[in-house]
Amino acid sequence: MPVFNAFESTNPRLKKNKPFSEGATAGTAKVSGRGAKSREELKMLGERNGWTDQEMSPRDVANLSADHYLWFESFFPARLEHASEIQNNGRLNAERMPIWNARRMWEGRATPEEDERARIAGDTFATRTPQFARTMENATLMVEHMKLRDFDATEMSSYFTAFRELTEQGKLIVAPAQSADQYLAAHAELHDHRTPPLIQVREAKAAQTAKHFEAAANSTAKGTVVNFTDYAADETGYPDYPSKYSFRRLVESLDADSYARRLKDDPQFAAAIDKLNNDNT
Image (cartoon, rainbow, N blue to C red; front, side, top):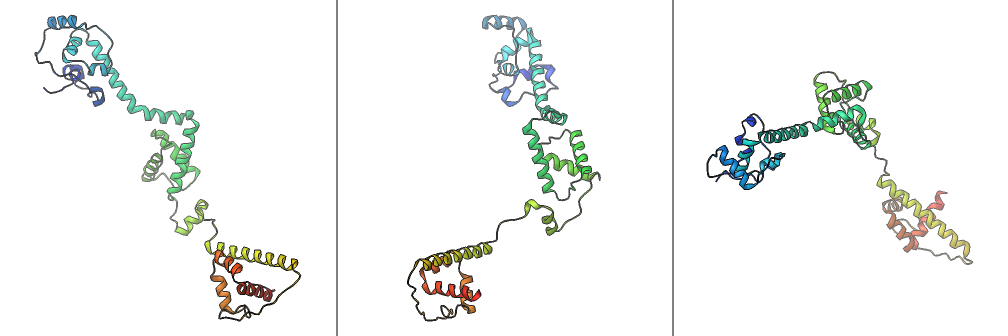
């Protein structure tokens, strides 16, 4: 047999009301197969089942069997009407709750967390909308419009909607168009302050060179005998001619790790670096 909601189908006062939600109608009983019952039959059925008058919630009504519902409708219809009012009020409250919350915040009763969320939403909107001129006049218009329309200030969509509506009405002052360079110059938060990789390599080389010279100076000061070794010059120009352009290019092409390794493992390279620096002084 088909399943139906006895509360809705038999109460004439509900014909203009919205039906119960699916969650509230879960478990609704099946239609009685014995047809309509007289008032006397319902009375006897109620006595036999121990049915009594009691306050009913919408869920209680939805869970009534067909006979039990008809019993309430015949003897205590006010209980069914009250349950209907509760459901309708609950649905209305759920629909209006966002509006009430928005009004509460606009009246100055927002929580610190809501204030912070509203600040972040407004700042993010302004950052993402270069057409929005950050003027006191525009800010006042936005606030008044959002308050009048009961917009939630913690939601970024509220700002975009208000901006679109006010722009269409010609009330907002729109910022002039900017090139990419102009926009970047006007937003310091987008500037990249990191050191470029090439500069990092050069600084690392300079640090390694200074470290090498310091170690060499300490070693010379502690030694009592100094040995000189002649190294044959190669195509890079070192050690005899470290000022050659090819040698300078070799030094510039090395990354910090390679540069340090050559200083440590290649005596000719280290000597050429020493000579190059001495020639430059």
